[in-house]
Length: 93
Image 1: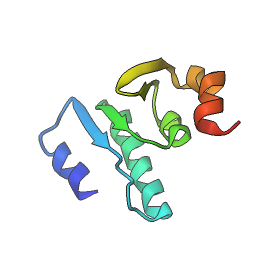
Image 2: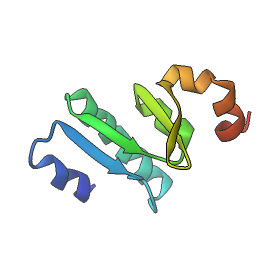
Image 3: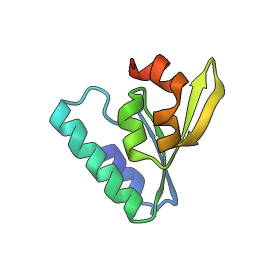
Image 4: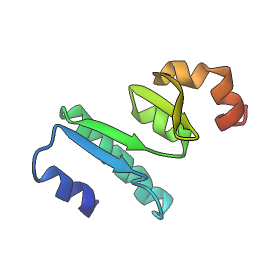
């Protein structure tokens, strides 16, 4: 939370976050994601890197899935959650 707050001090138009919940307890991680959502609703664009695809797609409008450093899928969060490739590879469905 301190790192996010420090990033917001300069009133950025874009906030880039790489695994913001890494190492956090589940309740603390949930609070962090609630704050990220609030920051976005205030008009700040957020670039979020997250390995938990389901959690990431509940926060974003658009998603990009990388494979070997290349974009292999992209679309809206809803499109990606319904995509059969995403379900098979990342959601275990």
